[in-house]
Image 1 (cartoon, rainbow, N blue to C red):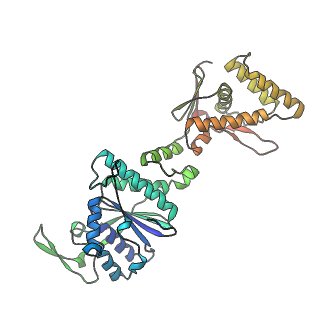
Image 2 (cartoon, rainbow, N blue to C red; image 1 turned 180 degrees about the horizontal axis):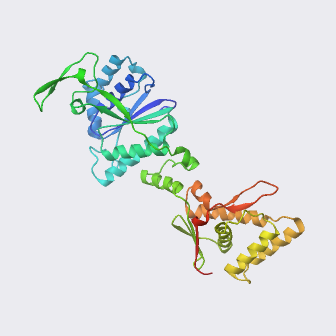
Image 3 (tube, rainbow, N blue to C red; image 1 turned 180 degrees about the vertical axis):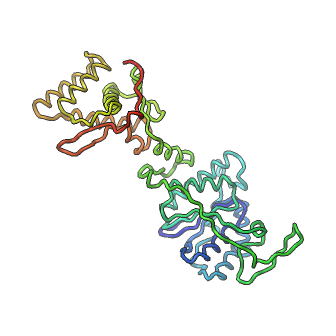
Length: 375
């Protein structure tokens, strides 16, 4: 459906084909705005049927979109919009939906809208999402998804039409030569010369830069993508239970090896006491030995590796034990927590200065660390 390097107008609607022509008409009135190269619509089977019969000429449709292009001086052949650009929401069995009414229907609509917006923000130069005539939840999913993936030039809008034109089935845009429409409910007539069509821009928070490389990836459902983003945006909170030997990262309990748990407790306690970053030297080795005594006892087998490292420090001035253990701890935290990279980084032991005077620390504040229980 999508070509690269195109400006795309995505209309999310239920049963109202007018959102397409009204949005395009409003864009034509904005002298500073580039018109789309392609229009896509996410709707239901009934919405697609109405679009086909009103906007397009194929299969005997009225062709209101073609007429709009003629009236507004748009080269129709340069604007891609046909039946292949209309995507219908499907249920969990793959069957197209005529309406979105159940919880499962909403979930499927959310996933489709989310994935389409994610893809379009990768493939297009600019994405303009227009909301009108759809279920309120469809608009919410579109707005939230654009908040996750939207770039500085992307746009979210709602087309506004004054009554009684906003609900008139025969009104698609104000033609250059006004026409008279029948108001059946009031047994009255109105002229399209009185119609007003404009776009109201909807501000939205752009999280793309904040999420960085943890931007939700392909294959996630809408709810999974929201959870992923929430994990990145949630302030870090580390709880260590010394009795249970568990670490809790943002509510996720994980079990670490004895060595990794002691290392995490070591750096967490230093951060809680606001100690400065340390170098992996003899002083650090002495400090680590005291933490092993405290948490695992003086006869702990963990002393053996540390004693070997201390001998290396004395004879060679350095030991691979420290950097190797730090790297393995950080990897274990990433794999066992299941948190996005940007979120788990808060709990990993970070490099704070460059060689040759490299120092290390856990970059959490005292208020973000809780140590409980007795070893």
